[in-house]
Length: 276
Length: 138
Image (tube, rainbow over all chains, first blue to last red; front, side):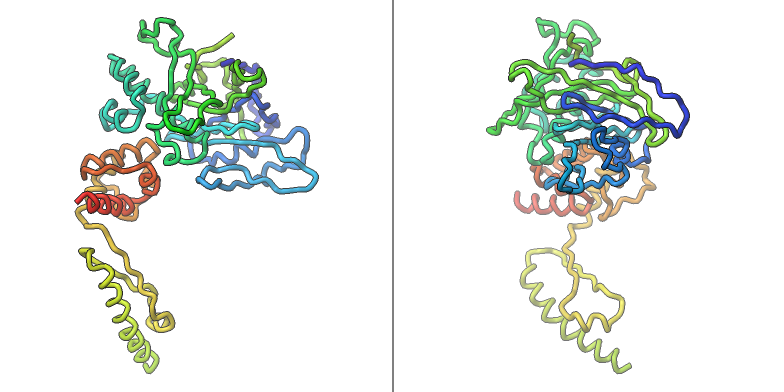
């Protein structure tokens, strides 16, 4: 995964918000808001279609697909092709995040890093996760690291199901496995800093449906307080074999007031490793 | 006065057949409660068959569900959790909801499939599903 840092700094005059370009096909935009009480749909309305100014962001309407996933409802017009804009929202009590792509279904999930389960982690995992994932968690002897890995797995699984857009029941958690491949070839966790050791995240389907070839994941720490997982489709411009890395742009925002691009700062710390 | 008398006659004649029909269909349920919608009798007389019947889960089931929810969401005792309470309104996110379902499975010795779990939005939904599953087991 390749993360590009943008060096723009927005000046703090509250009314001068710059219009934002739509993501390209290989890009994901991540917006997040701290604190709450702002409807995230307003984030989408910040985008202005560069090629055609016919979209007034305020006019954006939303609907739900057959499974309840929110999507943009474009006005139909004869001479205008709306951008294939897709988005997904996730929130906790202290953060709202919205991921935006063009052309690729996207699912995101955010969770507080300190989140503690009421149940015992392995009991929960045995009930809901795949056996492979249970094995992975069981092999971690440090309870705190185990808990962190659990939260990361949870966000990745949620992001995948939300990207599929067919609801929790269409893709029960036990029917697919998230694989976290360690960077170290030995696959042994040598240090407490597990973060640096995950180089690749992939998903394997355990059922008959082969839904899993096309998905790629980003996992990162957000705002120092949350894990964020993003799932979107791969773009096979290299003819299948190569993994075209996702380009991520992340912005902290107070909608309609202020935007701050936060890549390259401590607000966004990639976990699934960088490739060069 | 005359209209009221008419209305009350209409009420009594429309009540009985409906109740009887119902009681034969619901003989296996332990309790049936019904509420009459509409505050004024005259409106009832114009819609004679419109009694609302709700088959509630046992109060003990509802109370247990409320307890599990309160515990999972760490709600103070002063928070009102009732049959109609929506999990999301009580502050539950997806992980909380899954933990609540797991807690209900443990408490009642049942297994909740994902497609059923997805339909649970309120305490009442959970209690009704529990009773259905417990009855299936028996």
